[in-house]
View 1 (tube, rainbow, N blue to C red):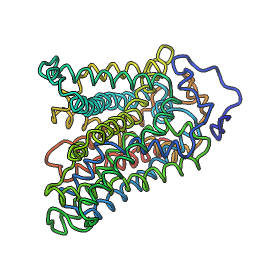
View 2 (view 1 turned 90 degrees about the vertical axis):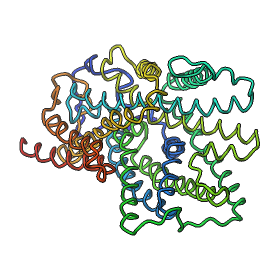
View 3 (view 1 turned 180 degrees about the vertical axis):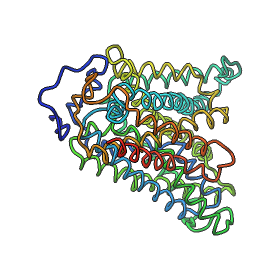
View 4 (view 1 turned 90 degrees about the horizontal axis):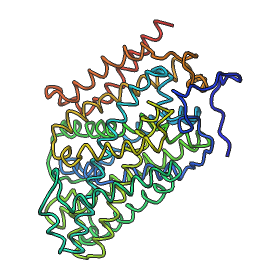
Length: 473
């Protein structure tokens, strides 16, 4: 299939692309093979993981009823849906990945700043998610062969021998998938996301049967005041926005492969407000059922699986959760840094090489040490994460309100062409608004507003960038 028109103002005659700005992977997509199901499956891969299950279950444990969790997350996912459509339209129309889209507002070389911020966050989380999946595999291996327990008694760099074996094995499998390009990613996530639904539905049926097919959607384990329920409801919606702000920023990495905008919107609709809130509701139902059946709310599905006392079920469940974690890792934490690093030195770094660099970096940061340190996760990754909202606000306002959707894609690959090397207005906007978002996210005094740091950063950067750009037009 040929690529869709790239821009309203494409120049027929343009200078050749600069090798410092162009390679085949960064160039506009030619084969647009992603259909509605592919984008729907992408969201299944991203949503169906242990982290989102625990997040939804945790809201129930904190005192919200299943119905309140469902409505709060539905509200958040509807906002995310519209945000993904905005960034998805840019990627689908231009056909280029996130770091090249960033050149529109930040400049041809200034785009390296947002690209590096996004890449660093993704690399760290790539390592952490790989480690979490390896933990499930380690438990599975020990269940199958308890005789391997001696391999857990001696460690190196903070991880025992069996942990190293499982971690490196998963690391290698993911690297193999990713080095085969975006088409391999598409095929993997097409079946990876649905797999977790099978296990989750089986868990729900099992827990409902054990609870005599009656689970309350209106009761909660804690009695909260009306004011506290409202605060937690909006806090849940804000946190889910912050969580998906990472992928909202670089969703153009995927939408560039869609043949038209209708495909993007339909895939997003079924994958976000429909599938994501259904998964959250199912997670809460299973958690509520565990409290009714076992007398305690079990928020870890792996722990719940262990109570089935059936080795084949445990094996299938552990493998499925590990594969699901790999799915979210590939979608959210690998594709972006592969493109982002390629953008730094296109002549030498392709998508594949950028992916390998990301994978090696994720191994070198010793993610099990990061995950065991809440301070590092909160202040380093949380602080960087707060920067993503301002980046999104600047890019969306620049494309839709300042440029009115008119972009010369060919000039994005030309040094000294229509786009400056660095756009000072973007940087003047980014640094103060990013600092504001980081302070709100990290300083204890602002803890009540912390769940809204992404939204505050996005809104403040959008307003400031619009004002600065209008003033200098």
